[in-house]
Image (cartoon, rainbow, N blue to C red; front, side, top):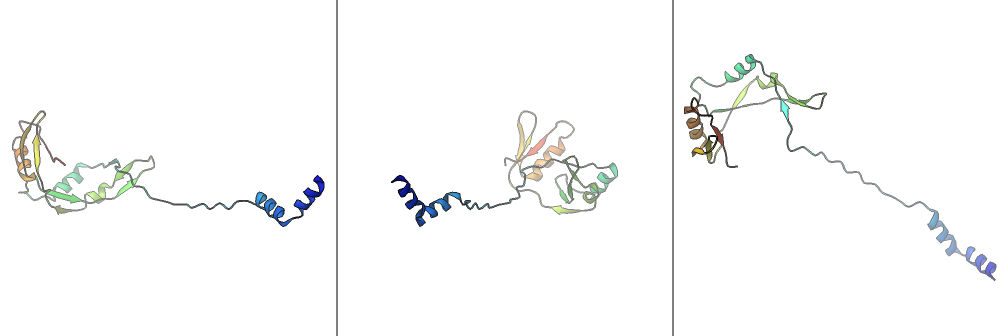
Length: 141
């Protein structure tokens, strides 16, 4: 009786379908998503000769204010050791006038805020006392 029941089940189409379903390979779909994730900060270095630095400083006029800003453009390349290098040749080629930053700034000594105001007035103040103090000009942002 067991043999008859087993033969009846084995010859049925349902058994064949169940057997096929158990042995077939499941379909697996793999989706590959590539994203370029840029780092927040990249440390880079530039080596300038005195001549290159003087060439860059020559872009400022004789009567330039200490707060005048020039923008120098360059190319950043990855070195074989994994570090980044700024091309000094491109950097010394030319500059363009850059607008002064807006907002409130502070002139800070080692322990206190000595002056506050717009960027140009803070640079004036820090520059006028450069022989007596080591000031830095910072933004609250």
